[in-house]
Amino acid sequence: MASDFNQMPVHAAITAIAHDFHRRGWMAGTAGNLSTRSKDGKGLWITSSGLPKGKLDTRDLILMGLEGNEIQQRLRDDARPSAETSIHQTIYTLFPNAQACFHIHTVDACLATAKIEPQTQSMPLPPLEMIKGLDIWEESPQVALALFDNRLDVPSIAHEIHKRFTAEPPQIPALMIRNHGITVWGGSLQQTYNRIEIIEFIMSYIARQ
Image (cartoon, rainbow, N blue to C red; front, side):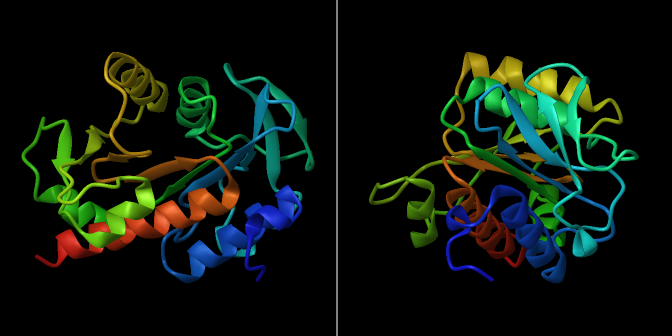
């Protein structure tokens, strides 16, 4: 595996990351989705729906616009967009500097957020050293992870994310959908990869308390 995913062709990098996350148990079965902004900035390449992430190959991505469900390009005739495409579209629209967006499902993240009362919209994070990896450079940082309720209607979740983050930008480049999974974004594939490791480290710490 390359030491820096930014040095790999985009489709190869996404495939390698999917395999890595699957090995860790973060993308079990067909769960989770990964995307990167297209070179022209007008769309995003996202992993196809319903495919085992441990067996993903470079043809299993779809090019979508930043809004709507119209497919701009697919490398397999039977490829279908991820069910969470609308959330990725929302992140790229809200954060112009975001170049990658990863969504994974982990046991520790679900256990950590289960400790938070229902209807609570954020989860305070412990002031661990690892938070510096999220560009929080404070002595005793007081930051929180944005929480959203899970629904079968994913576009309604995307709408809530857009509404809340437009009113008040998140403190860190991540969010959690309860009983579902973590979504993290960054300025490059490698940065997003690093950040999702950090978020998962923090979730594991909270889950074990």
